[in-house]
Length: 179
Image (cartoon, rainbow, N blue to C red):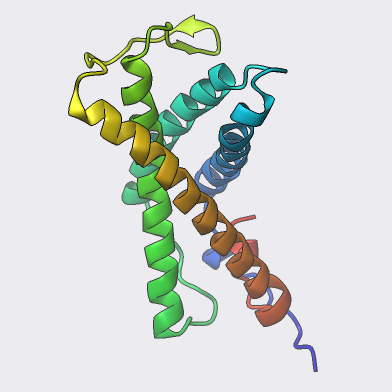
């Protein structure tokens, strides 16, 4: 038997700034994961890496702003309390996604800085970091970027599935707090 959705209390909704950051960064992260996965199979047809790098840098700076916003503003309470494990899982996924939204672009910036090609943000020259291919951090950054890309993809999928579960199965208003 289906339960009726819990009415959304405005006091439990995220503010417009948080919702805006969430929407923009979510679209950019999903697009960039797709570009990262598709760049090799499509490299003979189209060069996706310049766009991938530009979006990555955008995600980095928006994520830093989002984290500042998040730390300066208290998230609203849930209309109905979540269980202990759900709360812990939710916090772990959210803070891991925040970390990845900063670490992923940083690792890309590090190993791109060691390359021969100029670095640009949507065609505008962007400064490279002072690293060379011989620096151990460059190799570590490249490997980390690839592995963490898969981790981020998995976490985004879990995050989306959890939101859909809250909306369609539990009907507890959790998804509507952010939209």
